[in-house]
Structure formats: structure tokens, C-alpha cells
Image 1 (spheres, rainbow, N blue to C red):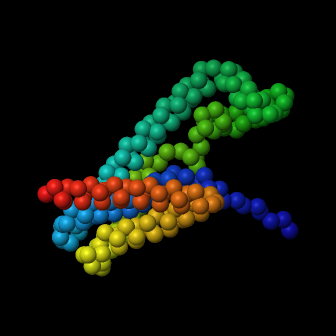
Image 2: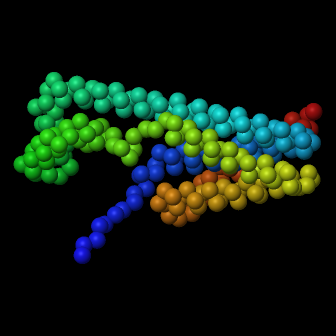
Image 3: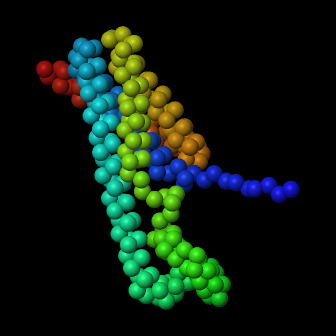
Length: 231
């Protein structure tokens, strides 16, 4: 009895995965940096917490709006390309068939086989074939603005909640170090999770997010201490 061979490809997750990783990383780094900067300026715990909550809400909304606008622009471009391809298929089908044939020849098929493949795919789904093989647009990689916005905002809020939780439980005199350490550990976990979900291996994804997170927190801590001393 034959078994059906099924595969799960990482590209099926690329849309929401990119937005979720970006949102979580930004949530951890920006909120932790904000908290550390305010704490370094000798602000009381209540003011630090208010600043962190405000950063969470503003950041989540900003991420959602930014992702929606950005991915919507991509979706608009895809629709425009598909509309143009639809018109060209209607007005000059022979030229479009030849174009598809040349694409397959460039990919390694013989001219005869390329012509047969192009003819059969055109008969089955001409627009889908051109969208996929000429424009690089498929069901898997097509832009989804709402999905990207929701994934980005939700992951930002989750990431931002981690340093905020530390503010609630850590003593004030150890707050900066506690938030910094917890945030770096969260970034390590995020790097490992995103690498696993994206099919990547090695320490580079982990080191990448951890290094830049540490740099951001160090910079805001320095700025907060400087302005706190000036005040």
C-alpha cells in the first residue's frame, strides 16, 4: 500500500513568522530599554511602570499600523501586477505563451518540453501560471495585511509584558539589572524559537537578536543616567 508523502515547508509560515518575530523582538527591546532608561534617571517604580505600560500600548498600535500599511502596499502592487497580466493574457495570448515557454527554458527544460509544459499549464490556469512563474506570486507568499498586523501587535504586547512583569516583582535597587538580565534571556529564547520555526540552525540568529538588544538597553541606560544626573 502506497503512502502519501507530505511535507511542511517553512515558506508557508513566512508572512506571520516575520511579523511575529519582529513584534516580539521590538516589544522586549523597546520596552526594556524604556524601563531601564527611566529607572536610570532615578524615577520611582510607579513612574517606571506607567512608562512601560504606555510604551506597550503605543508600541503595539504602532507595530500593527506599520505592518498593515507596509503589507497593504505590497498587496496593492501584487494586485496591480495580476491585473496587468490578466489584460495581457486577454489581448496577446500568443506572446504570453511564448514568454512562459522562455521562462521554463531558462530554468533548464528543453525548448520542446518547455513549450509542452507552458501549453498545458496555460490551458489549465494561465493566470495562475504567470502569477507564480513570472511574477513570483503564490498562495503561500501572497501579502496578508490583517494577518501581519495582528501577529505583529500581539507578539509586541507579549514581548513588552515580560520586562513589565519584572518591574512588578523586582526590588527597586536591583530593577535595572533584573530587567536587563530577564530581557536578554527572553531575547535568547526568542532567537532560538524563531530559528527553530524558520528552519535555521546555529547560534547566529540567537546572537544577532541578543547583541542588538543589549546595545539598545545599554544606550538608553546611559541616556537615562545622563539626564537624571543633569536634572
